[in-house]
Length: 173
Image (cartoon, rainbow, N blue to C red; front, side, top):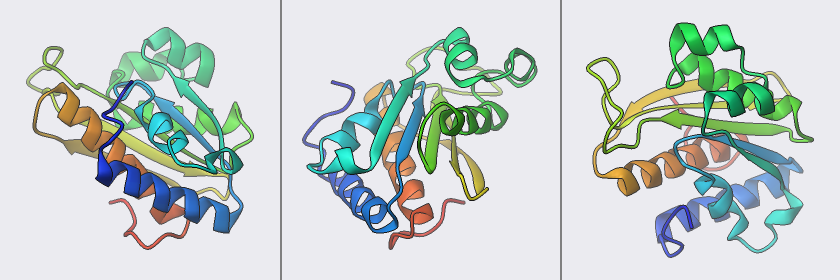
């Protein structure tokens, strides 16, 4: 299980998202790396999510990002897997490879290892895209252990999706 199933804040966020997507009659696709399916897990924990959740891609390796989502090898090589450019390419790829109206992508360094001076542990890039042409990206620097970084990433992803779907939460920065 990618996340603690009983995380009330995440489940509340997923519930708000499912309601917003139902109102909009939108389908969702996720493209996840460091969260390992945690966003999809949170959404599908909500009864009725099958009406709005099309599919999720867990693209942990660079090869998976390229093969499943069409992320350009040159983009990965130039920017690195943990970058806004790759997150946007993942979100766009999830839209192309699905029947979704909206997507979210997340790539980051959850730790405890893998960080660098330029991209320390806790660096997470998220992107949101819609068929209407909206594309947003955000880089955050999160604190805590691996589980905390992953859970915070899921919560931020859900908030951004809900905002784009017309929910009550503010738009992602």
